[in-house]
Length: 82
Image (cartoon, rainbow, N blue to C red; front, top):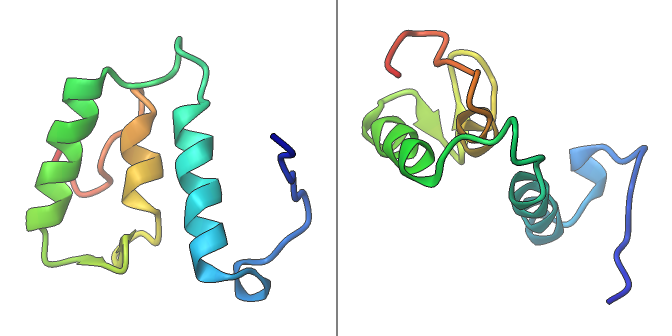
């Protein structure tokens, strides 16, 4: 498989589908020692999906992509929802 690694792309310059594929690949390939366990990750996403601040995969309050923030075990919701 020929992977394309982009180090200087802006999201506005990327195809939206390509950007989200890259985001999901990044989450999948996180080092295991920093990655949240699958159950915790899914629990966090469940909380985010119920939150009124979630829009287009981003937290409108802090600006993070919730799937990325939730994937790293030591991260917390800045609004203490998880």
